Length: 132
Image (cartoon, rainbow, N blue to C red):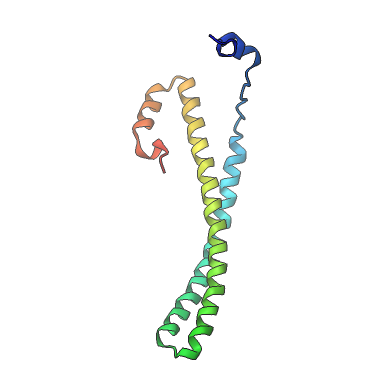
């Protein structure tokens, strides 16, 4: 057996990954900030989608000379929508990870403090499975 596969060798020379402690209050504040700011993003996206909807209605009745201008305008609006929506989606994903970390940390704390029945119950609940 090779020396580097021995457990004592790994303990001495192997890399140990340090688990970064989660700052719960910071995560809660970040999620709150995201939720308060997301209403502005949604309003902007809704305005842009309304503009796109109007252009699409115009496209359906437009003549050949106007179609190109219409499509170019739709392209510019779609560029703005795609960019904004990408930011919005990324923020939602990041804050979803934060919420999952909060829930996981809660379950670890609850189990550590003797609330094993509560943890067992929560792990059966679909919302607490964190598969979203």
